[in-house]
Amino acid sequence: TRPDVTPLPPGTHLLFSQSGKIEHVPLAGHGLEKTQAKALLHIPDKVVIGLAFDCVEKMVYWTDITGPSISKASLQGGEPIPIILTDLESPEGIAIDHLGRTMFWTDSIRDVIEVSSLDGNQRRVLIDTDLVNPRPIVTDSAHGYLYWADWNREAPKIEAAYMDGTNRRVLVKDDLGLPNGLTYDPQTSLLCWADAGTHKVECMNPSLGNRRKVVEGIQYPFGIASYGKNLYYTDWRREAVMVVDRPAEKNTDEFVPQKRSRLYGIAVASVRCPAGQNYCSVN
Amino acid sequence: DATLGTASDCKPCPCPGGSSCAVVLNTMEVVCTNCPTGTAGKKCELCDDGYFGDPLGRSGPLRVCRECTCSNNIDPNAVGNCNRDTGECLKCIYNTNGFFCDRCKDGFYGNALATNPAEKCKACNCSPFGTVNKGTSCSQTTGQCTCLPHVENRDCSACSPGYFNLHSGLGCQRCDCSAVGSTN
Image 1: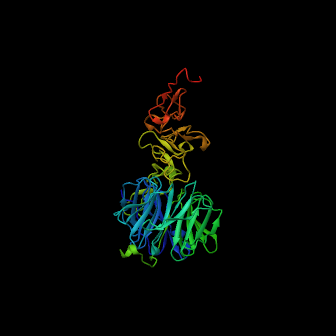
Image 2: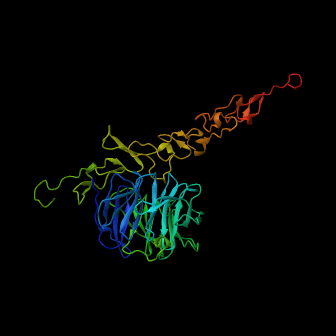
């Protein structure tokens, strides 16, 4: 059976998953065009957890825990294309290095971070130690960095490493609860996270370490994405996408989809890729 | 198709409780877009993540979607805690295991259903010297490890009275003390 694929009009969109569905909302400047919200993809027998967007080929990538599988589909329409179907148990976060043409994902049962090229070839385990509940993972393509978080209730942490797994280090371990969501904004070099345990969104520049709180008292964040001055996070309890104005440090808007159920991964489908190159893109 | 001008142009959505549906553009397939809480699927025939059952009774008697509770031995922050159809628990914590996280995993003993996590499942910690084949598992309920001959204690860590040499790994040997030269 073919899933529903609604081609996206040009412009930047917010994509988010609601178990067997990937929805999109167009972004107009910093506002959400809520009336234009639509399902991009119906895959009702799947549970989509993580989302990532490849700005080069305009494809959305996702992890599904029922297969389990990693698949992709074009924003311009077309069927989902399965990429990885073996040796997955609970794939959750997924990130793309658009320059190196690779993808990274976490698996919370196998407790690993893996990498492969975007077609699923050249797959290998990058990190397999000291992981308990790894979930979100993001890339800083221009600098070849990888960031991920582990919501291990005994010792939650946010870590960094080069994209080849070397130079691994713990960035944040104090005053963390359940860091479910992580996002990196190349424009401002800010790494921001959404924590369902401390009920805060916080940001820091990973090379400066200047951590600061953006909002607190939030309900149950799962995924987070950044675009311009805004942060967008999905919330399990509100069953909505929440908009945060980062510099103003406040919630400014929310989008409640018609279907009431948990929202999982979130990603921005931008028209242009951020500038830069890294050595994976050279070789 | 509402433009044909007949009374049957619009058909009701084949979704529970008259909830909404949409037609897939390229296949004309109908997909329910607002399944009731806990259900999912094209016709709301599946349970959503965190629930299990068979809401339309497709493979036997109808079972409404219930939350996976897994004997309270799962973490609510985890995804995919149970199989959406059978309810088999997939992410047991507190050293529990089993279909409903209702027993201790291998190498642990106690009461998986205890309310306090600290009282749930404790490590067997069998003594490697006193246990048959250096076993690491023990009785689920009592925690008794399988001791070698003349070895005692729950964890097989001591010789029976009158026996010595636990570290031989073959069981303890009789002391064979001379009745004349020993104090008792």
